[in-house]
Length: 400
Image 1 (cartoon, one colour):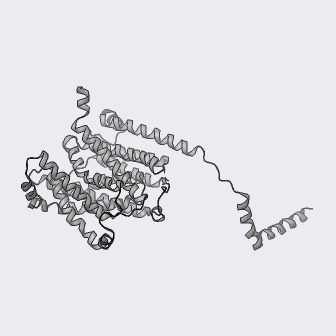
Image 2: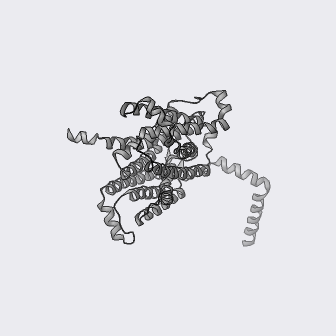
Image 3: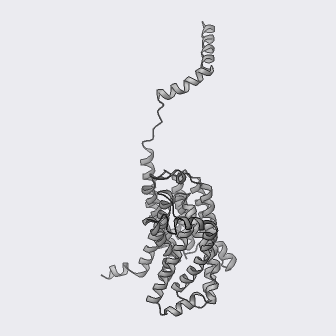
């Protein structure tokens, strides 16, 4: 009984919630943008998620916290709340870019590329907080960048889902990559800025902070609606195109800040990075079955490098990168890295098996007689085949 109670702890539950939320969010957004009528308005969905986040965190503060309604309301519009205008604006931009990216990229490509936010976070931490970056972390950032580059050189493909419209099947890969790039930049800067505000401000519960972020996000999220989508909303309504998948997207998006806050409270950064890596693997495997995504060995190598780099950066075990023996000893000494290595081995076996089964029955395409006749007819009409026949006749006559 004690083993079961230790397994169902706040730490494990929060980590499991983070894995499921991260994997489910990208899969549902991709599905909502690639299949179906695709009629919902992105900016309205982002604002709706922020409203749900405010209601959720406010309810938790009144239930779990020690404050009453009037006290919570006064905290939402205090001077401390004004400091969150900048991260709220960046999070609104990031959430809108998330839909754009997953509308133009496959889930595996997005999941791996999005880990580039670790690089931007490290950069802004160095600039804004003056945080030192160790040799190990520099090395892990280099591995991360190399892994992302290898992934984008792979020939990962995704078949057009059944039921997708012609507009949905035409994806702009460059637009998707640009959306992920700017999303990583906004995520890195907003996260570091938010950390700086928390360290310089009095202690406030995570629920109040999420409510403050939500209020400013709603106010700022209304701006793109007024500029671009107001006419569409007036004609079709705020909830146009909503279905079960879109509602699931909104609920997952609303719970992001709460789940991350619980993970940081009951776990640590190392376990958070490990949970993120597991979510990448789960979402990639699920996309194979849901979207019929095909992967190659380059993607497996690049994704493994990215996952290992995330674990390496967040681990508190230091080592000297110039000596391979120290790297090897570090890899074997950390329990978290051992778990990650087992995960990567399972990932490699699965990828190899999948590639083998998908390339075993590849055959050369057969050219039908009708196709040959269709090609031969215009050539004969143009005189090309007649000239070749005359040339062959002259050669035969010369030989005889």
